[in-house]
Length: 149
Ligand SMILES: CC(C)(COP(=O)(O)OP(=O)(O)OC[C@H]1O[C@@H](n2cnc3c(N)ncnc32)[C@H](O)[C@@H]1OP(=O)(O)O)[C@@H](O)C(=O)NCCC(=O)NCCS
Image (cartoon, rainbow, N blue to C red; front, side, top):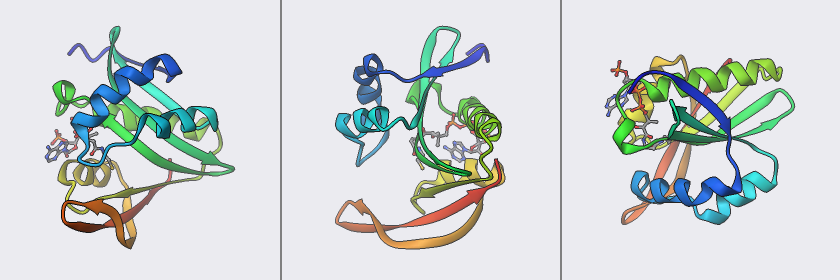
């Protein structure tokens, strides 16, 4: 990986690629309809490129001066090389430029890589939503986190 990262808006043409990775990355993946609805709703949807190769994607809902990170994903073959940290930094740049003052997310307590990345990036845990996620054999809480972009 060269580190020549760039970002572009996600479009409907990306959804086949996105879904091919979404089902590999999550035990309970978003549906194609979830992504299509996000595009249709005008959410901030981005694809991350390493040179010309797509390696990550993200979906954020921005409402006035608050944003919510809804999907944040680096493909398996590109993980653990700084792409996630770089994409998060880029998204925060975009949010600051939009005047966003607070960025929120939910994460599974069992998602050690994501929790480590968010904590290292300055997110603070501000609460817990009980039984928020579907999980194998039951439900799993969500940790709610917040950062100033
Ligand atoms: C979470 C995710 C986006 C991280 O992307 P990434 O490109 O691998 O992350 P980075 O290489 O930028 O790692 C940045 C930091 O995060 C932490 N981290 C990342 N992966 C980790 C792992 N497997 N175990 C422990 N810490 C990890 C480390 O602190 C790391 O810094 P370091 O490499 O200097 O130790 C990626 O693992 C992913 O897409 N997972 C599946 C989808 C998902 O769960 N998304 C989050 C939903 S809330």
